[in-house]
Image (cartoon, rainbow, N blue to C red; front, side, top):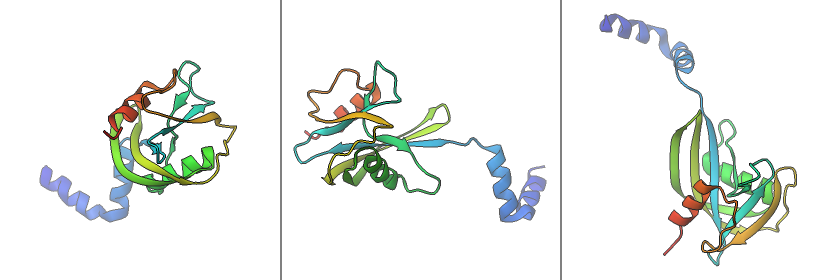
Length: 151
């Protein structure tokens, strides 16, 4: 039986194999977050308009576009939400398992630009020391900030 399945699979060739795999497997959204720091070690936090009222503060976050490298998502989202320019560093967190979402987090460094908030998504932005994070900060983002804080 396994031999027959293997023969049929090989006979289907590339395009049909991909269609079958697409139908048979879960589809995921990819949420990408940036831990953006300035030259003083402060982290950029945003008070998100669409987030729950009891925890509106968080890191710059958004969904990757189809075919977009995840590091580019950080650059795009930070710029769209704040007008700031960043340079993306290392990958610090990768997790799946939350519904149909994959979470990707990169460190990033502020490199320039002027703060210009997208008021459709963001109420306000602040540079915060890791030792003085605001109330209402999303718990997972607090953990990310503290676990990625340089010694």
